[in-house]
Amino acid sequence: MKRAYNFNAGPSSLPLSVLKRAQEELLNFQNTGMSVMELSHRSKEYDAVHNRAQTLLRKLMNVPETHDILFLQGGASLQFSMVPMNLLHEGEVGNYVLTDSWSDKALKEAKKVGKTHVAASSKEDRYKYIPKIDDIRLSDHAAYLHITSNNTIAGTQWHEFPNVVTNLIADMSSDILSREIDVEKFALIYAGAQKNLGPSGVTVVIIRKDLLEKSSDSLPTMLNYKTYSESRSLYNTPPTFAIYMLSLVLEWVEEQGGVKAIEKRNREKAALLYNCIDESDGFYRAHAEKGSRSFMNVTFTLPNEELTKKFLTEAKERGLIGLAGHRSVGGCRASIYNAVDYEACEVLVDFMQKFKKNVS
Image (cartoon, rainbow, N blue to C red; front, side):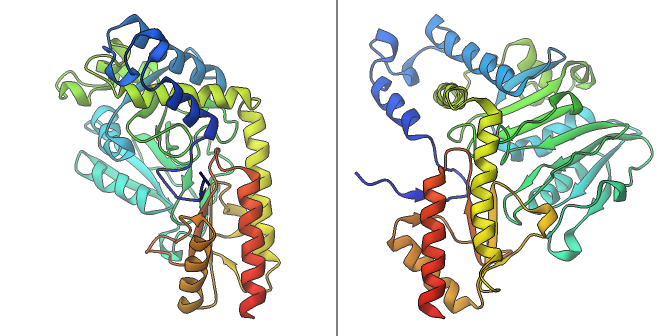
């Protein structure tokens, strides 16, 4: 079977070796006579999977013991609500940097919970850049500063994180595990799995333990971070198959040489595509400004809508899938998450060069 070159923004490409291993183990996981999907989440076999995922993530991201690792459901969208519900209290203000529609949605949910403040924004310029750190203006009584580390729609990314006097919170759904970061700088990191961590279904939350005391006991049980921390994310049935797949992806990252090696490859892939765009004499134009370009989502436009449709149609015919840009930006988008290999980017660049030559 010929595999597609998968550039979807999410759910995204998974490592082929991971898919093959899951296929091999699907009907009989570790001689249990059952699929991992059928195992009790209280069984020792599943418990080992659960622990393996948490241990590997802590190791690969160098998560300090001051932080807890939680497995939740509901995606990043639920975290838009859980963050302010747990961490934004009377007399405090949730601060947000707006860099795409996802951060805008996070702000919208926080407004339902308490007071908010826009500390910086690139919204008026169609989110083409990440605001300068010096331009961030915190409110008085700031409970936290929320950022979106990578922006899938606009194709922008924070390449330097702000040092702030309040708690720094990041939605890292689309670039977690793609580069080395200092987790200690963050009070809370959250990420839906379906970009770099595995299939959709599990959401990872990395939270500084002292923040757990800010979660009020009056919150609904399943919306309280303490519930997951105190139960090792086993208060109710977790998304067991998604966590199993997460553990396999983390093993794959370790086999590749860890996050440092993954980051090197991601930078090489992004450079290949951006060089093609920049050397096209304006035929392809990057949406994001150079200093803010994402290594995960390469967004670009063609001279007109007719050529864009033709480009996408011919790309699909050649097995290049998921290249349509988001409707709010238009054009094209190549999402090159960890599991998208360098060869796939070479094939895309070759197609882009030949397409330009054929229509010019």
